[in-house]
Image (cartoon, rainbow, N blue to C red; front, side, top):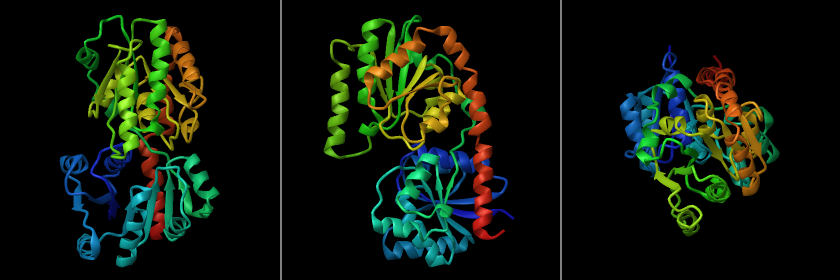
Length: 364
């Protein structure tokens, strides 16, 4: 009999946490019967429909909770699983209402209020996406036996099947001799796109063939977030970078973009676990990343890429330049990434670990 689980998602977007959930659901089809509670419209709703995954629209208020509870009873759901820290309390309340266990995925490193810590402690289990996240939760007072580290998994074969070699470079109109460095992720201060552009200025002065791409969108409506994005565009149009920086916004063809990069740069100031880093490695892209959060768990320094100190554009530039000017080294790195991901961060490993946790929680 398949395990019937309800997944609670807060936002309509399709970002790292949602992609990780969808990859897990795809890898668990033989033993799992999922229902995803999520906003009625948006990219996530479209992705669920395209994959034929049962979708219950999220409803707020007491009446909405009653409607959701009724839908989950009809589906004979056995477990409620929050896909993020922000939905953990909603999942816990739903579970309590239905008399079901509830667990939560934590994909963030952030300071928790005493109230939130108390509510998290009432869950039946917490999945931390990295050891760094787990350590942070335990350091803040969550019981160690409640927190289990399960890294996200990626499907290298699926990623490779989506690649159209050369298409992205052709879209940008780059000359054949150009080299392309990319930064992919939500536009936000913690993602460090400003550091990427500071690095770009240094590299652009050294080599006129290098181009830089920024893929991702801003989702925060806060004024400081808007100003941060405006500052990126202002810097990119300065004399040192004019015509060399390409903003391409939110993309659904990330595998093709990654495949066309000479180097993936992840300049984050805070990063619990970088999904795009794993995807880049799975596609054999050399990586330079800042050593924050869970990054050192994902990147084997010197073998699959380079880790550098955070918040230091000069050090980032030197590491990127070291790899750019050493083509034999980059060729050595390329086959290491796919092997590393296949051995340690496969969807199969993630799926088996979560299945084992479900069985423990359900007493099977």
